[in-house]
Length: 117
Image (cartoon, rainbow, N blue to C red):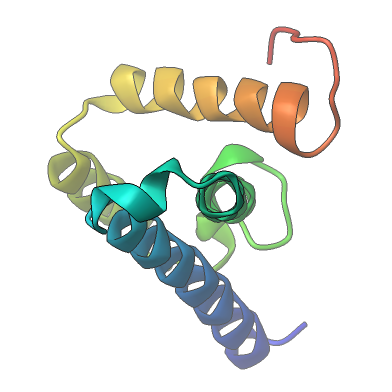
């Protein structure tokens, strides 16, 4: 896959994540009666689950086709900006990455038993 195509597909993936994160946040800001209905609770849970799936494509799997490192030309600078923007250091981000992978694998994508990554 050429660089332009990879960047376009990664951008689309980022937009899927951001859209679902916005829906999730909007639901949690909605009037209380709607948030009590089972349908809306399920929909909101789906929004966050899709966020986890998309996030893991970008950050969770180090060898994934759309991992951020396949698109970034200056990995060191990207990491500096990433850690600063999310308010974590390298180890904190790694712990978070592994935590999201366990959630994804155990509850969202595979229903696997938790394991060490």
